[in-house]
Image (cartoon, rainbow, N blue to C red):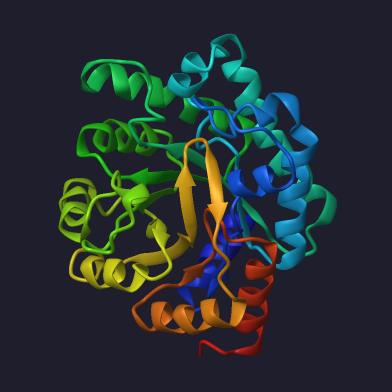
Length: 304
């Protein structure tokens, strides 16, 4: 039985899985340069050992699942960054970094999720649903060949991009996670204007919801907005649910860190579990210490 099959069986029996923390913002905090077009995607080419180190630290902190550094490694970002000839190498290096990290330090089953960004910033340079689907399919194929256990569609905020990405992911025969991102209207966080409000996220979810999904996640959504997202999702989806939120401010291509105290995160996480979340982790701005806090809380039975 694969690591993912073991984890999924545990999840189905009521265990809470711990997902990893941020990759892109963690790379930036450790000195990796961020590209205006490919963000942290070029680190797979220039600093693959640092990518692996972040994975290793998340695993040591207690992550059951690590997510590849491929959110901004698709055809579109790499083309816009002038690195299209290194597209395959970047994906291969990213999956290898995750796989080697698992092999090096994991002392329990740890699965690898292959990230695919579905934002306009990360989309393939194509027109029409067929062209978009083909562009996403190339990334899905490389992730699958590299040995990921599950495809994680991330920042699914635009139906036009989401549907072809979902079609490409489901065609892989791997489990697929649908990662929804949103914001609560009126928060007056101008840097998140690109995220849909709860009603907009609902429309995206309704367009993408299918029984073929392994799980739906609320991700890259501010920690203070997650509960509203879960409440929106509840009538639409009765399957497995995950949460990995962000906290901080985005100034392309950089992240401005705004700290969230781990005990405060745990208070929020308790509410997320009560709303149905069975997988907990972090996105931009949430670090290894947040993963460790979630792991400790899960192991202590704090969410029981």
